Image (cartoon, rainbow, N blue to C red; front, side, top):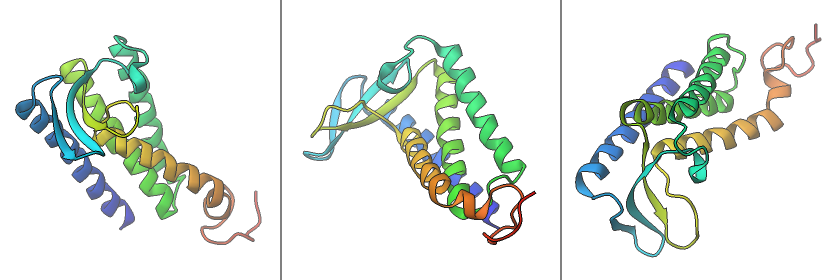
Length: 166
């Protein structure tokens, strides 16, 4: 049941990511801005040929390969049911959704469309997929630090922290 819920959430977020990227590309010329939350966030169309902070700029195939490997590793964790706790599952599906959103752009366009620009601080322009990846990583860290040992460590029954290990 949790897999179905999180799969639906991931598909909705992936669709939202692609829709927002399409909308921004159609309605806001490259480099132009439009207020979203005045003083906080504005929309700015940017083509990002790299990763975060434009690192590895121009290395499309390397970025596709690395992101693809990460997505495959997360899929492996999900298929093998290594992660069973809802917070860990949510983290995995968020990372999958965001990773796939950026893979689609990079494979189809050669760059990733970014649009959210903080006005109150110097921070790279980002997109919905990036939000999913960052939230997924934060949730994954919380899960791993506080819940993995208790719920999903190999050799323990789910939810039984006192079960004997192998």
